Length: 241
Ligand code: MN3
Image (tube, rainbow, N blue to C red; front, side, top):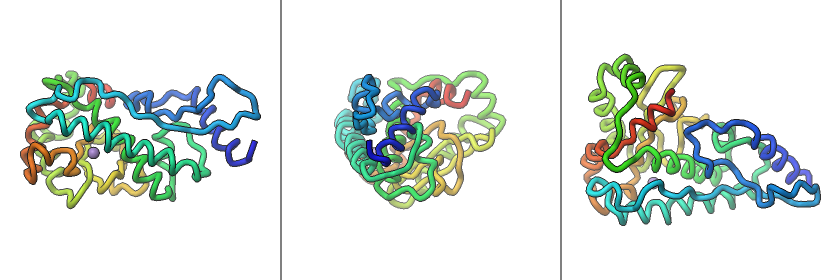
């Protein structure tokens, strides 16, 4: 076995026994192509896979239209997964999970952009739900404590999303136990060393034009207002708790 492959594989196998943070879908954990074959002669290669949407493309209408969801998931997100796997072919670092990978220093652009793209979209799909859902009472108490009210949190997310120049994300994060709203450009993520404010992502809202343009054209603010009809606050609460 080549040294590089051995290092990479060792990291991944070690990771299989480490709990992946609950917010990360199974699909975000790197898979090896032949997990049952432990022969040293077998060259194992890490690969990430596109998670299924947990609902139909049309589930979030009229707030997010079916064609946007289909293109966004099947083409954009699949593209990030494919390019991430390609970028990892020439990446020598060891990591146990996508979280670990994204937190590493000096990521090659292909890993940073497409690893972020895979993480961010995996989080995004599960942050949405037809009809939305209610936060737990404990999480609501925390929101009231850190923001004053849920309305104030929504206002900060809408304003933050509107303030992103070009493409990026607005986030609700837990930063050393405090809830904060922050933004990242492109496919950066609050786990990354490049983030202005780092923390555990609880909710990420995509403000790339591809997330809303078919239905809202240039009206990003209207998209941001409307997305609160379909936020899965119960899931966001679980990520916090
Ligand atoms: Mn997107």
